[in-house]
Image (cartoon, rainbow, N blue to C red):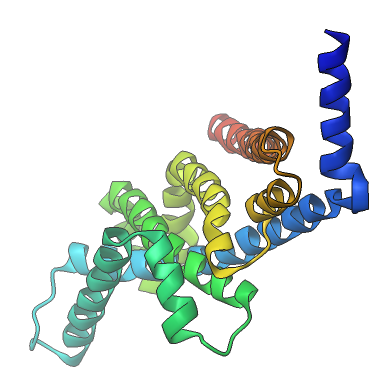
Length: 242
């Protein structure tokens, strides 16, 4: 047993201490968090815009040539449907490779990852928020308009807050999925967390500690997101009874 512990200790030292190989992990964590946060911001902006266009179309049911506004709304809805269908219907890895090798050839790897995951996440967030908007009672919109508010202020101040609140559990799941999906960035040579562990494994030919360390760090980050968003969700739920 003592020999086994000595072997594990030597492997741990060789994996992380020798040549300061733990830097691969710490640098990978920074890249993973950076890509996740920036992609989430892009995804939220895209998702809200697409959700507003699609939910407005579904609720008003415009005709193509009834007016210029109806035509633009119909066209916008068509573009949004194509965007959501294509992004949700193709693998994230393929999207990342297309963006890196075809579309964004002169850009940095971080920018490629951020844009790709932002666009990908936006399609899923759009459907989540659209479901939340469609779940808000139609009387809320009518009440806002009867108070003299325009469509956009009513949507921004009355409908969207309620939709976001009801969609929060699904948005948390999307945030966690986005964090874990960044592990494929190694395919374009970006040294995020997973690739950091894989580099150590390639140097030492030892997979145990590098891969389990990477898995444990992902688990800790996911648990932190769940804990943080759980507190937000409880705070929002408590406001219902005030």
